[in-house]
Image 1 (cartoon, helix red, strand yellow):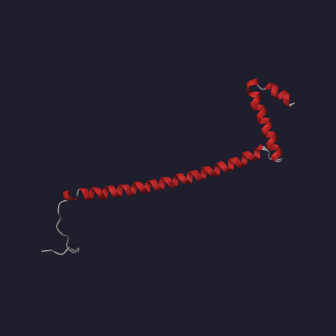
Image 2 (cartoon, rainbow, N blue to C red):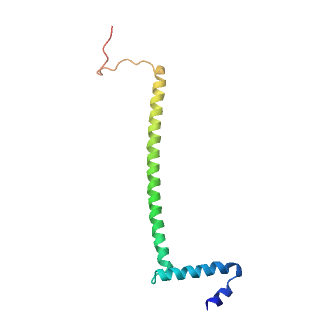
Image 3 (cartoon, rainbow, N blue to C red):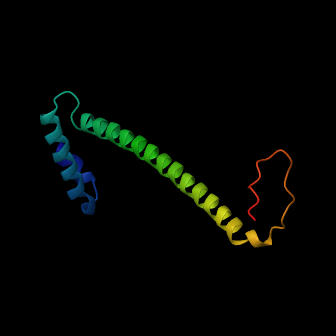
Length: 104
């Protein structure tokens, strides 16, 4: 029966088909109930868990990147104020705020 099926398969695909049949037979011996389907199911679960872990890691990287960018923007703004402090005109003191003592 198996040889008859292989004869229906194009010659260039027969080796692949024979390998697939042998692999299915191997996994059927390893797992009498599920065979290769059991292995495929386990691999799909592993892929799903790994994809979830990757998504969580990417979210953490995005969060840390945003924090660093925010800190960088704040530093840039402070540096701009420091660099351009001479351009800000002197304002009269605001009543009620602590004023530095006059130094003669």
